[in-house]
Image (cartoon, rainbow, N blue to C red; front, side, top):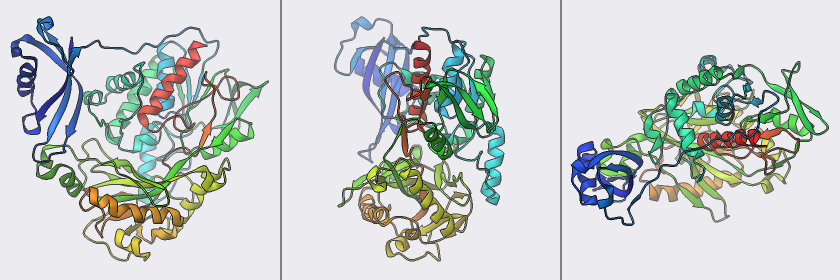
Length: 519
């Protein structure tokens, strides 16, 4: 097979016939010579808004590829596959704590090789969790154990389902993750799109299919089962305590607990598991009309394309990083709280991304120096600010117009943009929530972002608070064999500090599964 890069297709001519015509011309051969092609990558080049192009990278099967002259963009193609190697049989059933992407993919790979994992999830299975979350968003009655942060599928289940990552993995774990998603109901396009996403609506169904596959392979799920303690003997893991009373024994325990499992972090510290504080980010979400963002990114041809995303960065005069995070085209802002009398938010989109507003977090980096390098200083800061957000919004999502945020006055009337939230909101003053270094950084950055995206800093842009769960505030230390300071205890995924999103968490889950059956 051959690989051909930089195949430029006008967005108005994005069809099979034109692609074949274009490729045959680039190869200097006839269309009939092309037996089939497979899309390897597809991205958008919108630098010239009057001539927007799709950029394809293709794998081609030709009748006689030896006739083709190889160049910089035309080369031989060998498809590499991921290989999971099991070097040993386990003498116990591994326990996976948490069923977010890290836990699910670790369990999936172990189940494929006959290890019969036990998956412990503090929250509910996805069907019940969806009902619990919908009830909370309508009534503000929170279930601290099952919500947008906790439950089967993890926090990413109630998000945009973004799968893009900058991670380069020569062993093709990245590809394996996408194959598993597709096998379980995700759209096949995620394999080649530059910025793939599943959407919260489809992702929920995919999670159910992954669960059923693991069960069919001998895995077992236990819901409403919070690990409240560890059983350790001579610095070796021997099992866990569930809900303060049930003991489940195993010499292998994977901690895929997610970035919001604060009580679990404290429990680990009580058991002398080595951890250290980690940098993260805190800020607000901002909402704009989706059409405005789409026009700014794509020009007048925006209707021919999917809703637009963006990535913005800025360094303040005080050397703080301000950047957009978890951008949700055509989505919602959701009340993502997980603790009583504390409030945090997140972004969420369905697969079609067809809501009227687009949103993203605008966050500012927070370093361990900001909380005196205390192990749980980041958690304490998050909780303090989430308490302020809860008070400011009277239990609802606090929102404010950008012009009022700049002038430090409470918003009393909205402009043209109508908030698109899951959960009630209250007109507020977000300056009352944020530390001054964060609010000042956002105020400095937004006019700069307005020069990059027309209208980004419009006066009636809606700001919402608070975005405090960007990543884990601690790292659970692990060695080259991926074990913690206790033998047989494997920190895994975003909560442990080794991932930053659905894809990287899933990849880390596979890495841990490899380590378990390797040594």
